Image (cartoon, rainbow, N blue to C red; front, side, top):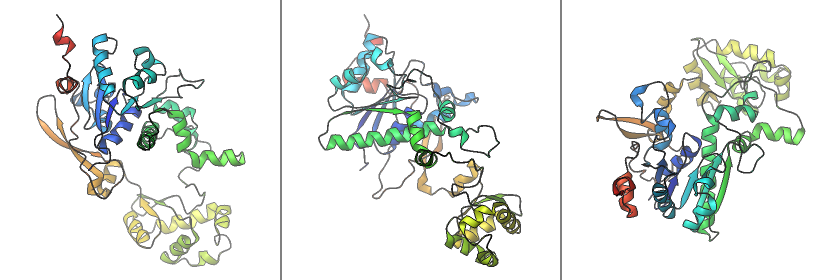
Length: 391
């Protein structure tokens, strides 16, 4: 049995942060009805490859297995369809700008009146009641305003954007966790909830390892480039003999001792420049130089295999396509695709990021073309199509 079997979500969200939240819940067994505009979610045609229009890779990434119905929420008859869906749902997810759902007649109070104990999750850039509530926000904007762009790179580098929409996905995860918490509270008799998830707040929480040290000490963390959080020269990036790079994460005394033994440099353990973590930080360049010479003596795959076997954190820097080769079979999910010419194909998407025992069946994850489930949904609601039924 799937963890969220029997749970229904009315998903009014679009693009990435909101859809990713409901996507994670869909992967845990929830039924998700995606309410789209007549033009469809903008992500359906995202990207430059027109072959995927309607079911673009970016869209599939957060919408596999959802049902789709296209509604004009400014049309009273079609708004009634949306209201009927909400009345039969456990959860509502929306990521319009604050105030839009109220103007459409589907704000929290109106929706909760339709479905007692409704869990209503609003996702926005800066929160429903913040001073910046009306600011438009997308992933790279919040990467900038949250300080995230100033955490990567070296001291004198310009701001650096994380190379994928990390704010969108971390916000979606935050929303999914909040929804699961609200579901637990409802099961305990606590009723429904109105969840306010902001991309900005979620980013601050996600950056706790950088933000909390400032809040406690008043000092900001220095930018360390490819050196790890510890600031140690043994937790950084090195070039192997074959030109490939390896990332080391040697931060514990026992790891450093194991490294010294493996590379036959036990002298490091007695050298006052390197014998302690503080000494290695103080003699950063000297330690880096000695370790770089060692790593350059053999190929990257050799170091990854040997060090990992000895309990020394080490990984070859891979491209995304290479990284899929490390994935467990259950980490990537097979899905069916129906192309615009009617042909079928198979592809894969990432799973939810965890395994669970006993395992459960996620069900059919075929991404739905726009409005593909309209007749099914209207029949389930006991309604006629207002477009067809007009006199």
